[in-house]
Image (cartoon, rainbow, N blue to C red; front, top):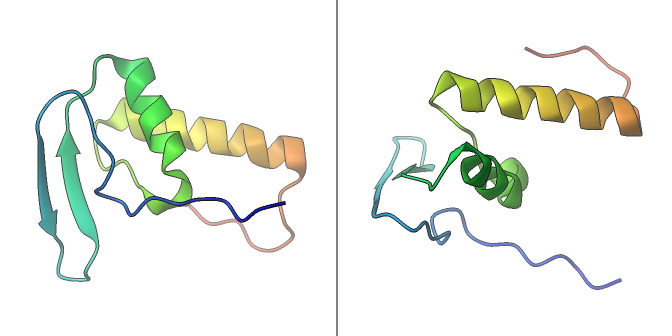
Length: 83
């Protein structure tokens, strides 16, 4: 199986304009406007573990819930849980 292709966070395009800046730790902070909530969820899942939703809270909650469902389906790895 070929290696998965990855995008550098920040090279992702949204239909609306975007603002980018680097944080002190070198991570890219991207502010984007999406068509609707479903599009926002889809876009972040496309970026996988390379992206974190900082706001709004409903999007953070949605990602957390989906991640928990996936971990349950595939079996969460042993070890301490992190919050």
